[in-house]
Structures are given as C-alpha cells and as structure tokens.
Length: 519
Figure 1 (cartoon, rainbow, N blue to C red):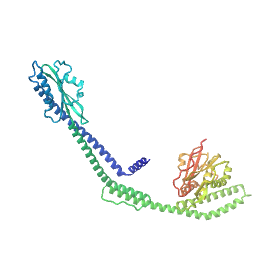
Figure 2 (cartoon, helix red, strand yellow):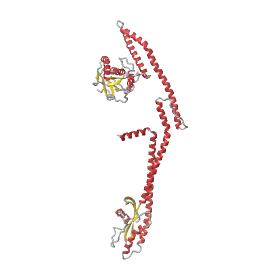
Figure 3 (cartoon, rainbow, N blue to C red):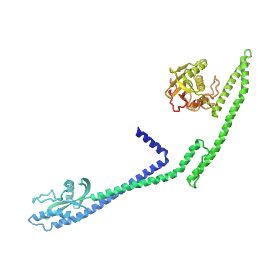
Figure 4 (cartoon, rainbow, N blue to C red):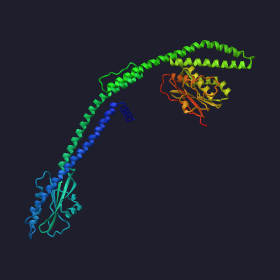
C-alpha cells in the first residue's frame, strides 16, 4: 500500500512537472547513448586486445617451431637416448622464450602412430590437457598450417580466456608429434576490465553532469511558461490585473507580450459582459417588480370575473376562464423570473434547518395527489421506516419535489410514478421515476436549461413556465447537492435529487440508483 502511494505520488509529480519530464527524458536518452557508445568502445577494445594477442601468439608459435627444429638436430641414429633427451628439453626451452605473457607447453606423441621406443610426451606443470580435445588434435594432424582456438582456463580460481595454438612436427626417425602452446589472456582481461570500469565511472559522471546542466537549462527555459501558467490560473480565478514581465526580445518575451495583450482584451470583454449582465439582471428584476402591481390588479379583476361568470354567454365564459388561467401562469412566470434574477445576482440566503426528508416528501405527495388523481396517475412511494434527517431549506426542497412530481405526472402518460427515499452515512436522496415519453440524449443535455421544454408541441395542463427545472437545479446546487436525470425514449425518465446530510459536507455519493424502470 505504501509503495503504491509513493509510486502514485511520483507519477503525479512526473506528469505535473515539465522540468522533471525534460530532465528524465534527457538523462534517459543520454544514458542510452552512453551505454551504446560504451558498449561499442568496450567491444572494439576487447576485439583489438584479442586480435593483438592472437597475432603475437602466432608469431611466438612460429618462433617455437624453429626452436623445436634446432633442438632435434643431430638426434638421428640407432639410439633413442638423444631423442629422449631432446624431448625433455622442449618444454623448458619453449617456456623460457621471452614473451610478454606466460604460456604453457604440451609436446604430445601422435595417438595414431605406434611408439615402440616408448617416447615421452612432455608437458608444462599444471597444464589442463582437457583443453586439447580429440577434434582439435585431428584438425592439427590433418592441416599443415598453425591451428588456433579460444579456450577458457582457470587461474587463481577465476575463468580466464586463453589462446590454444597447435602444430604438427615430424622428428628424426619419422616420429610424429604435436606441439600445443597455451597463451593466457589474463593481462588483457584485466586491461579490458579496467577500461570497462573507467567507461562506467566516466559515463556515470558524464550523465550526472548532463543531468545537472539539463536541469539548469530546462528550469531557465520553462520558467516563462510556468509564470504564464500561474498567471493564467490567477486570471481564471478572477485576478484580471495579472500581467507577465517582458524581458528581452526572444520567444519568451513574445509569449509574455501576447499573454498581456490577451489579458487586456479579456479584461475589457469580461468587464463589458459583467456590466451587460448586471444591466440584464437589473432589467429583469425591475420589470418583474414593475409588472407585479398591474398584474395584481389584473389578477383581482380576473378572479372577480371568474367568480361571477355564471349566467354569461358561453363564449364570454370561456374567455373569462382562459383569462383567469393565463393570469395565474403570468403570476407564476413573474415569480420564477424574480427567483432566477436573485440567483443571478447571488442574493440567495438559504435557511438551513434539520428536517425529516420523509415528512417533506409526504407533504408534497399530499399536495400533489389531487392533480395525480385528475390525470389518473398512481403515486407509488418507497419510503424507509424511521426518520431521514438532513439539514436543508425545506421550502426549496419542497419546490424541487413539487416540480419533479408535476413533470412526472404531466409526462407519465397515465402510468404509475415511483417515488423513492434513501440515505447513507453522508447523504440523502429522493428519486422520481415515471414511465412516460422519456427523453433522447440530446434532450437530456438541455433538461436543466432555462425556458426549455422536452416537447413544446404537447398541450400542458399545468401552465409551466419552462423555468421549473432550472430553478430546481439552482436550489440543489445551493444545498451543495446534485439534481440528475436519466431517460430513454418511450421508457420514461428518472430524476434523482441527492443532498448532503449537513450543509458543510461536500463529498457525497447518492444512495439511490439513477435509472429508468425497465418493462
């Protein structure tokens, strides 16, 4: 777990730091280049040392051939003691030849020839005759030229490469022998290891120097970008006076100049839009207030006419009913416009109190029941036993639920509407699910837009203003909650309101699913 957290923190740091990424990439690429270069140099030096040692060994082996020939001059005759004496001198003579490195000698009688005089096969002390394989001996016997082979010998408990050179001889009297010389490459191996250690150490030091200067250069180059990023963040948070210092005439200076021009233009446009928005908000608020007085007078007149419509001609009576209904809708529209203007002006002060959400839902269901009966819609409630306590502005929650229930009944096509309540440790939720016309994905994206209706061609019986869901969404946001919707065409819609149990809780998960009812 700890390693996982450390790894995650390191990855987050790597992703968020341009300087760190540039440093890692530079060091990684430089390290790769140094490894490749070091490998090439190591192989090249090793091949050079091996080739030089092989050439030197071949030269010494040719000299050894003449030395052996000189030792056996004058040993021909009936007796074999001179021949045996010369055989015993071969190994000391060849080992004592001045060479740059130690070599071992084996002068072996050919196995394929009879040895009636029982001549010896002298060898150096400690030589491993297992290095001289049967295949190599047959090759030496069959060829006239020197034969070389790379072998591994043991020296001081370590495996050391060596060069094995073999050649054949015919001694006086027709005796066939094979001369094998073993040249160890211990010194060359030590030289190569020293070179490799030097390359590794030098590469590591070079990589550290590259990383250090890369960090300095990258930090210097990234600093203007970081300053621009910080200034952009401050600008996005409302600090419209933030500007970058312009130094020199390079690309960083061009970036700073362009950023400052953009900030100036953005500040001008935001200021102008802010003034325009304030004017619009003030206009809506003023118009709504100014219309309230004549609307009240007109509504009183419409109420009076509606109360005394009996006995009037049918056409006049229908006109009075329509007028009364439209005046009610006009009154609702003005109330919604005033509420929206207060939200836009950030003039809302909620009254948070602890309430039982079951009680709020029960009151809403009781109030909406006559309308549901008129539409032939059955309201099915799934409410848990016991209190569902939460800290809310009950008036606004009641408004949200009333709006959701009205929409569900209006668009439910006369089918049952399910109301569910649930809670968890941090949140409470209410969902309203109908089985009506539903909405498409495009319509879902506009569900909480102002003055938007899912189906404008449908005849509404409740005189909606098109602001109900927009105000409900703002009410949910005011509680630090969420108002969400899921819908499918022909299957209905599910609206889910999720609220924190206390208004100081910000991180919540809904205890109810957000899904339409499947048939």
